Image (cartoon, rainbow, N blue to C red; front, side, top):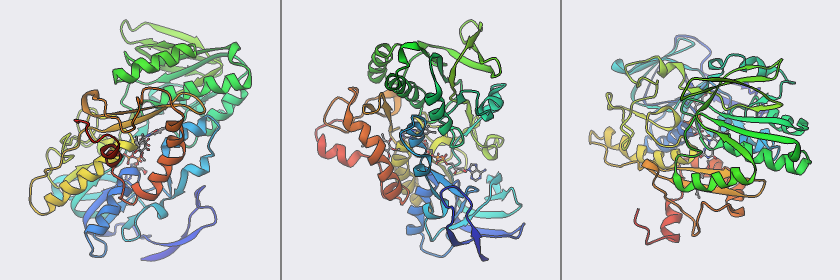
Length: 441
Ligand code: FAD
Ligand code: UQ1
């Protein structure tokens, strides 16, 4: 049923547009391909398959949100460089026109029966399924964190949410000196570089605002290293040292008492608790997969991640299911850059499966992380499975460069909105082949 709905999201204020949806509960739908999640991975795959499967309503996308965010720019929103509104577009404009959008949430995936039920009670029968539900913040895992985040005067924020990224910028602006603490949690997270990027940007911000000499900065990470790939870890340690940011390893945030401005941390080696006073606290919250997959032991591992083959991206038990992006158990860095590469592999392999052949294409674990180190420099980490360095540009990318900063700020968002979401961007491999034709991997 077609009807007109007012899009009341921040990006779509004042825009009215037709879209196909349903106002009646307990509808039944069926399709060749169902994509659950209309974020980076979901839009990209839907765009590819509306071109491949030409029949009407071949592709259904199940996605509850009216807004689509380009999350990688939230780091620069937190640093006060980018406006939140530039990171957001109406979902309607990101999904391919020819896909049928059901604006609802998956509740239960019955993989044995090839069907999904939604929170509003619809039932969707599919032949093939792509799961692209991403990761969600698990604020409740840290007692006191929710209360601290919602209090506008708490000086506790996170760039990992559109709701609080602007609060980070305002906290940096209000900071007049004292203890500034940045955290990294004890769960898998998306963009594992961002928790330290915001610390480096805060250092540059405080230098500019003249309060750096009065600030004591600390990065408390659950990990035993600053970054998972040694080449970049060595470079980043020098950045942290130069900026006089103390790095505490194996140190996990366990609670926040925001009226006393205290945070409790635990040391993972000896379980010793430490209470630290803060004047600014930037939290990277623990993360988890959404409930619709996390609680379905038939399709996920013990941590709640969709079990797929790390090379083919095909589900390990159900051959008509594939996974893409942050919600799968592939051991790559969870980034949009990884999805650019994964979508190409998934497209070819799912097409093979549709033709009753085995999947042949292999994902090599490509991931990339532009580690902003100031308001005009960046270390552009690129690597494959097992931390194998895999750089595109004709210089040592572990060196801080101005060009990488502007790629992150201008080029990547442009590629994302105009090519990746439309299914035409598969990562920078083509550039690498031109720039570096003799490279062996
Ligand atoms: P998402 O894009 O998060 O989409 C998941 C979608 O699923 C959402 O739209 C959600 O509404 C939907 N969904 C959830 N539950 C359900 C349900 N039950 N039913 C239906 N739909 C559901 N990547 C980089 O490459 N470079 C960077 O510099 C970078 N920096 C980052 C900085 C920050 C602060 C953050 C937060 C992320 C950053 N990333 C970066 C990571 C990147 O944004 C993610 O890896 C990417 O967006 C993941 O895409 P996805 O499709 O897996 O999940
Ligand atoms: C990338 O391709 C990409 O997608 C558009 C990003 O944005 C989310 C990135 O952050 C990075 C690092 C890449 C990798 C691209 C090059 C040219 C190194």
